[in-house]
Length: 228
Length: 317
Image: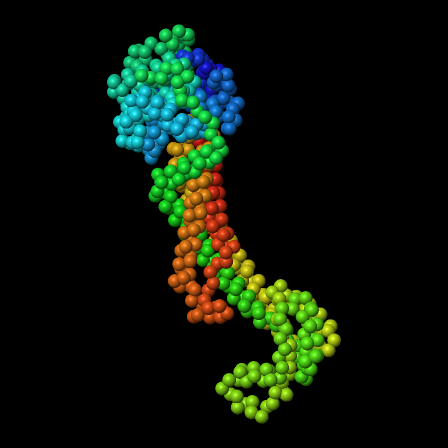
């Protein structure tokens, strides 16, 4: 589903941010991407959804080489990828409902009623249906995280990327978020979670890809029987 | 509790182009409601900018009107030192009228000439005691069509006038006409320059204001791009918003201009003796009003377009 081939990435004038990265993530897999701060986790995720282009090497998403995508093709790739950002990136002047609906609206498909149904459906799964008219600043960190997740999952993406999704959450919230990831994975979504939370990784027993200083330390073992 | 099969997922029907446009429009209006302050600033800037331009236009239009009234004085006079018979008068009048460029032909007989002469010497009529109308020449006064009031056109006109049989002594204020036309050209050049600079300044100010408002919402642009919106989809609500802001700014500036006009300017002519033909300054003609509204809309639209182009390139790489 996700393949990196001899990938290098250098920011202008700086030492390379990623060097010689090669690994693959199978369809339906659940992997952790880990490493100390500055190891390149976020950068790697950004390469997957095309916010960055590699200096050298290839990134293949579902068989598509993203370095060859034109600017007008990129949006269609992104519609198949749900991303949960470290800072959530929720729109502060829009309601919870609008924040989630935006994923469906930008695809230009569906009537208002269709969109409403699907948004309510996912918000109910997140236990947020009572807060649809609130704006994000009135929500707790855990609630905002769930809205960000709802936005990423509402169109049932093939790939879900999450950047430090449990960063500021307490244990109860962490558990809840992990359960949502697992369920998305069970329904067939390939999940990549970037985190440096060791306990999270140890509890879950999924494959772990380790980065350090922009280099691949360990790609873990590909295991096909992860969907249990 | 949770959705299990994709079969249960509510179906998404494909929207019509009309439905899409309605979405963009609704989005644009919602954006304006959610960013009231930013919108007030933008609309205010556009309003003021267009008000400056329209005040200038108003001034220019009135100057042009005044100039046109003055140019009525461009006249060719044909003098005769005898009274013409009615038959001669009408024959000559017909042949003068036949020359292209003639607007009006007016016969001034001796009595009429005497009356005018007296009028000019108002208060000193005694000077005319003992002078009889017979000493004054009779004349045809010919006013010209607008297109024939330039220096060259008058020369040409006079040449063809002189070719008529039985024509008298032709006179026209060559020097005055030349100066007047030079003045007109000068006024138009200065007006064009000042107007051009004003328009440039307005475009610059408005596009920068809009750029700031787009910048204030780059999060929204970024998120839309990250969840897979096409460039057009991201741009459309902003473009519509710019268009509406421009239109609203245009309407407001016209309303302001109208109230300024009604309050002060419409009778300004009385003390400026600017345009004695009509009492006071006239308002902008309809074409100018339409052009101002269109300019407002275009300004908003293009301002948004240029601002967006830069940010979208930044965001989508």
